[in-house]
Image (cartoon, rainbow, N blue to C red; front, side):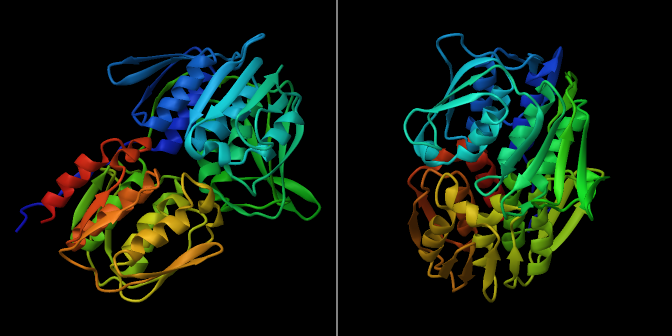
Length: 443
């Protein structure tokens, strides 16, 4: 019998790391940013910022960032190459940020990146002055961006393709020539958490902004922390020209990376996960509510930034995961351990990730004998007795979240084999070592 509850410390938030590094890169002066996630995607954002003139050096576990407050610097005749590889976040955030700079930039990617749309963001950027030239397929990377900065004023954006378009514009707007108002078009209602993370970074780095909500025929300033969704025509954003302030900053732990271990606690725990802010605006914190609804036992220690999860009699749930799409793979696998079906909805955009994440998870979970239905905006998992003692060859699709979630089947006595275990380096390079330690501790 275990004498103490096993503990795992979670790496930094990928979403916050991207945004904090960009804000520091645009700040006047030197910032020291601690606990930046060491992953492939953050390496992409760092390399692109450096290509645009930002100075970044490692010093005692920190990233020391010398910002370029006038904006990223492109080439005069030859473009500065922004190779975003397979990082959709880097591509979307930095497209808008580069547009707020000066010069010629060329955005290129790898893998599925040239199949991931960016046309609507390019349209919004072009409306602010910069020119965009498509090099292969209209609306998709690779493309060239020529800019003399952003004009400011009114800019509209539809978030049908990605909510990250809004975050990119928010990060870029303080560098515009005059005050910017961002209004939303289209029909898609976007969950607040990732937008909230961006606004938190703006506030932390000294940027003046206001979020306004419709009240009859007018708009009124609202407490952005109290908003739950971004509704076209109902919410708008105002940002004045200003400078990011350099500062010392520590990135909080990542709730999506934590999800695999919190789920492990629910099926084989108890397990304590350390490094999580209970008051975080990260949407993936919703996993605690999902675990509770399924019947797991959840305990939060705010003082020590720790969460302990212990098994309970797990039951299927019906849940809208629009606010936390990154943990859909975790919940889908967890549903295989429950009694009764689990239906996930609100996540049609998962088809446009590193893989078609709905089809990928459905196909791989089905290899365990569970039946999975794929819907337009989600999936339903019908659990079946899991085949303890079997070896199952899983396909990762090069998508980091697929194998990390499927690793949970090892706790059911299945031996998983993966075609590309290394793809987890995109967000969690140390995952396999951490999961192996947890698996041994939970025996």
